[in-house]
Image (cartoon, rainbow, N blue to C red; front, side, top):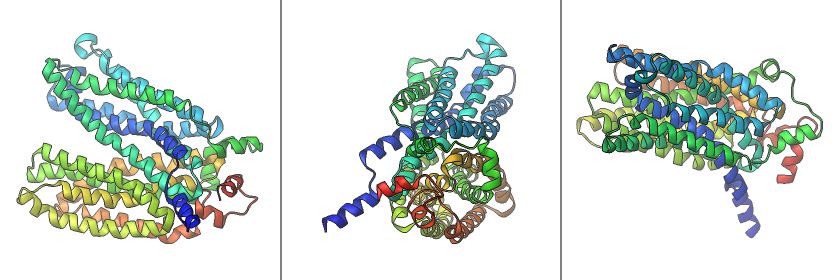
Length: 458
């Protein structure tokens, strides 16, 4: 009986070393999410500070968001380049470099001179720092996901994946809290610039502290093992990924489509739609969105443990059904809840828990699609292309759907996403995996250097 209990604990629980590794791995990507929310919250203040006062508020807002978009425009190419060095130089070295590249520009934004102090040099410096942040953003989450997955036991890859993604999404909550607290401090001290300076300063300090802590992490054992047996990384990992693993890239891109639709729709577009269409106070919607994000983050480690027991394919199928039912319920209940002035938080909490059932698997499953020699580049291609293509276009498509078909139209992309998730679940048993319990059943001993590690873990 005790042996069975120990095996069960081995299957579902992260040990102390894994929990510490996942926490440190997630800090940089958490800063990415933190910065995303902070910039949106203080966008108006940044427009006032960095652009001429004689232009219209609408023009300043467009210019501010154009600078925000620069980070995402450089993200795909920069992320793939950073992943190339992660595969050729080493996971840990790039891991530390990327968080420094994210943290230093974040901190410097907090001390930039304003337009009144430096003229046109002020927005140029802001633009430069946002571009540097974009270079880091494209490589940070792929690096964190690969690093965590290569440290994880095969029987706990799902739990590792869900925990990593859950901690990362807490950055959205921290960013919201930091922006709100900075606004209060700025008002009490009668120093308006602190409303935008403090969140960036705090984020920069947080990132530098995380970089210092990451120094104590060990190199990925699978990457180190590959180098020890003189299996050099591919000279051009991107070429190897696109020629030898095109199917895996397509699978990963489809997975990113599902994640982009669900997260963008429920946690970015729908809150704005509720404010605009039903005139619900923005603060009420913000509170509900925060609760939904918390439910999303807290649920992911739990769903990750379930995937360790049931497998990736079953979990994708279950997630598809849950998300379809939750979305139908959400859009059926929403008009009545708004009309009755009831709390929106329960709706967003249920939806957050449902969305988590699918996206908890994304880091671990995507990392499993590629061998050690090209894993970081393999992850970076679908992640960055998917983020630029799907997450970028999703709000535009959703706006058009609502205009043409009404306020229930956002349900249509959810239906498409759950169909794609179901197709991925059906096709996954025929996809080769290099990490996790599924790799043990599929992989010949001679094909991948990770097998000695798997044998030790078992």
